[in-house]
Each structure stands twice: as C-alpha cells, then as structure tokens.
Image (cartoon, rainbow, N blue to C red):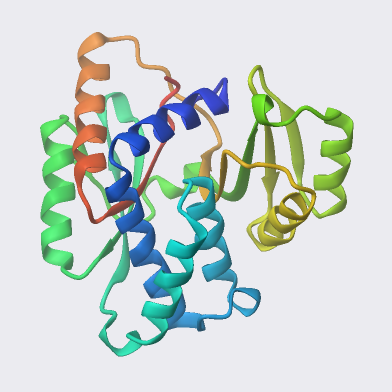
Length: 242
C-alpha cells in the first residue's frame, strides 16, 4: 500500500485483477474452501468465511459464484488439503516483505517464494523478522465516485459500528478497524448500501520506506511481479512508499 493515496493503489491492484480475473477467483475459491472446512458453510456463524465473502464481493465475484463455491466446499470438506503459510523477508534497501500463501505443496511454494526474493536481490528471513513492523487491521476503502452522500454521515456510520479510524483521501475514504470489529463494520456499510472498493483483513506498515535508487525499485518490482504471478500467493505486504 502507498503511504499516500490508498485508493490509487487499490485501483492499481484491481486493474491487475481485472486483467487476470480467473486467477483472483481461483484464489478466493481456495480461501472459501478452507474457511468452510474450518468453520462450516454458515456465513453468519463463520467469521473467516464472512471475511472471504466480503473480499469476493469487493473483487466483483458474482453472488451465484460465491454461493456455488460455498456449497461445493461444504460437500467436499474431506478433500480440502490447502494450508496457510507465511514467509517474511527483505527486499532491496531492507524493504520489509510479508507473503501470505495458501498451498497444497509447501515445498513448491517455498521454492517459488525464495526464488522471487533472490531474483529481486532480496532474501527470506526467519518467522517474525519483519511482521513486528506491521499491524493487523481491517481495512475498508470506499471510492468517492461510488459514494455521493455526506462524508460525516459515513464517518458516523462506521464509528458507531466499531471502527477505529476514518480518513478522507483525495479519491477515497479509508476505514480502519480492529480485526475483531471488521465484520460488524463491513456489515453496517453493506446494510447502508455503501459500495466498497476493498474490504479485507490486512497488514498495515507502522512506517513506510522510500526507495530512491532506480535499481532498487526495479529489483523490488521484479520480486513483487513474480509473487503476483504465483497462484499459491494470496497477498503480499510491504512497507515500500511507492
């Protein structure tokens, strides 16, 4: 995420997703399968599944596709063998990188992630080596073009629902929540008919680092592109101030 306009980066991500919508739908489908296996198919009683469904909707996945995915996962629980793994490391100039993956082959995923770091002149570190630089938060982004009502009303809606912070950016509104309050805030916005450009549990850097050398930017971008192309990779977080 950028240290400035959050939505500019969201739009960039969504453009990339739109160019490879099949991939993002496959990724979300895996997340649905794991969430159903862990907590059942009832969205109202499965927080993790509710969060995945929110992510699916923010990525414009059709409701019938979401429902089919849940039903399929509920009937195929015994065959779901994906597991979450997290890798931490450093890019050029010590940029902190966290990689969340969902895989059925940890050896394959570890090799691919390590290769992406190496090709970008970075290196994998030990568990916890950079995660202390981030805070896990719920983040909801609302495009100003999709919301034509009063900003104060929006702020009161999210704060009353339990949000920690509300910020107005140049092109969007950003809502930050504690992870435990995320679903309540998201549901309040949904019930109010507010369209969300992004709604997810994410890792937000405590501080951002700017890269000034062109070679460092190129190498970091190579690592991020390789990770983005890996079907096992669910999300990548950095403290790079783009």
